[in-house]
Length: 421
Length: 151
Image (cartoon, each protein chain N blue to C red):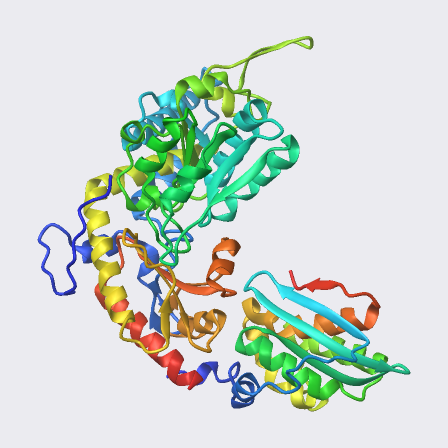
């Protein structure tokens, strides 16, 4: 899944295959100043910027091909439908799903998880059953299950993590039992950067016949994801964290599970035949895509996947890992800086606190230096509670970030410390 | 290099952040309220002792950014001895200067609070500055121990 760990701590490492300047030139938004300083965008775990190829693809749809999909006999409708379905096929290939109809277009990771909770959950979970998540989940992989538990009388169980922010696999395994109806685990934590041993998680659950959903919001942009190799039952991710548009995301589900599930929402496109006494639902994937989808955004997501594939997800993962190693190494030399989340297997996220300085103050001052980071609870309040902090500052990296930007960040943090003296 | 954010982070703000005034639990408070800013996780517990409609004493505890801590600290200094109505008027003045971009600020009418006027240039931080004030407003309105949120 993950590329080999490379401990290259020297920023000067030459790399003939990877030219970050060329990549930066693909992202028009990066070439600007903020408060008179060159923009250093390090809030990629929240959302990534868009390459020109994605922006152009969306413009091209609206300027040349746009009409509603799966309906008209006219030319534009056919063209839109072709582009839309081509994008679905690109997603299928990217995550190595077995069939394009196992790729359901949704608004994002959150909607994908809600879909599974309400459709799969409502029809398979009942009073006394258990849903198992982990202590490092994003709110979007907590709240939908709490809602399901309220509706059904099921119980939400939480597998613990250690102080490094690593899932405690033994405890996880002991929480699996005959009442467990679903396991929902984040692939890579947005607050900590932890990459979970999802293959082991899946194997342990499957040994007991329990299906597994992976929250891949951070996983897909940073790791090679092969849903068939993983054998996960559901995989959810968002387009906007993968250099694609917001408002489009994907739920992958195994065909047999999806076929057995009732629709999530009712409406147009998800039906085969409607009569007042009985409605026959459409086949996959349309059964789960009620209403006009986000057509141009789905096509934009396809363009984002093309873009990522021209660089190569493994190349991206390896480069980001070098960025993270360098950032972690430099951060370790800043007195008063405490990294939050030090898992041995970690993606490109540096979450930290500074002694006696609130993350919001860090965020505001860094912004004045042109540096965009996230300050807050990262929609993972239980994680903050675990570490006994109200919030953290988080720098998260993407393919277009540079070692020099990490230098700017570290100098900025030093300035924050000086200002607060 | 950071001169331009000195309008937000004035020395007075740093001073109150480092040494917040009236930062203590009040055992004989007549009102106690928990304020919460879910955006940044700031929490404040505000204690007020009211007697005959006058704020005899006010103190706070909590964890927050420099702006929210300084604002709470300064607030406890300026509202002590005020009547409930006077405190309410001051809340409205403070709210206006921190949120109303069009309003001409009369710094004189603000006294000590003027150091926080700079926050209006930072919409994302306004809630930090107003958390303590919203908590006070709620504390004066209600008798019960309730929670207030700036979201």
